[in-house]
Length: 178
Image: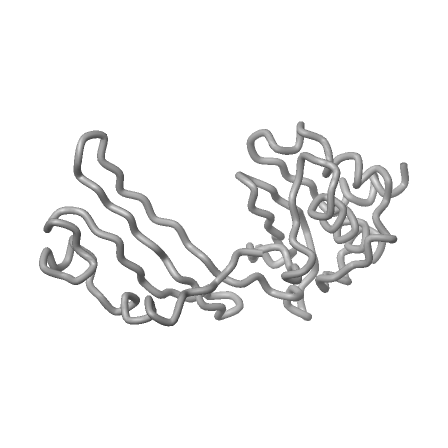
């Protein structure tokens, strides 16, 4: 799960202008760099998103944005899971209607890949649940006990961590039959 926590003392910084808009902003660093935040929302689930900007114009300067949000607990009830996508450590679901959203997850059951542990196990259990219900049950929180051994071997492998991987619902169902 992506974490959306901002210390109470930093909440006012959500409202300071970026240095690109105001060189004298409280978020500006020496008039050319900055550490600022902006708020957005996810258009599908209307979840809050906080974007954090770090800009430094010194030697080898940087200009980076990172975003933090919550993940949904389920996909829309009138839609069906179509494919699973993992890219750069983020986990996504695309639905039959074409919507792309974070893979539903609970904070205590965060997903991960490439090692033997709770994160890959939680992901394997979730994918097992989705495949076993023909994409209908997309609620987060599948019990570790339901994780199919093939899914678990796949989520624990380092091969999954390379590039972008996509598995359709049909691909997941084939793995479930192994």
